[in-house]
Length: 119
Image 1: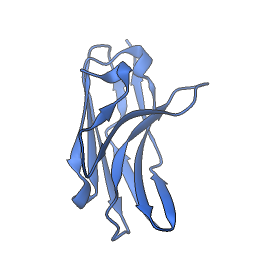
Image 2: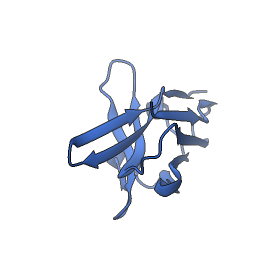
Image 3: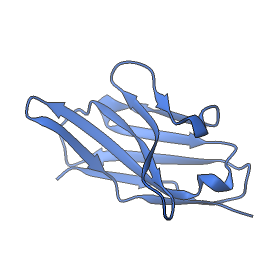
Image 4: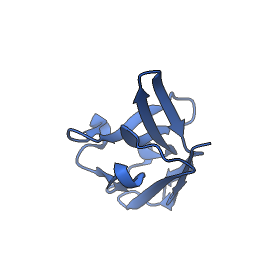
């Protein structure tokens, strides 16, 4: 059973920074992509940032210029550096990994880590 374990969430004041980390375990698979989603209360889960084994990372418009995704897919790790945080960034952040095979697409999720931006 693939596990994605996140860490780094917490409470931060507006304008502050946090760094989220995610590492996959219990797998020998190499993912095709790894990234971060978030879900605020009463809202749908949305993509924050994703990186793949090819191409440039993609970001939600709302976080461009403030968040940076990094990591090493071959090592099954992904990070999210969040700067200039705003109250509207408050959400549960989920690590995500995807694998595409000739049998279809497989999605994996972490348990989520709370990020709260407030005075």
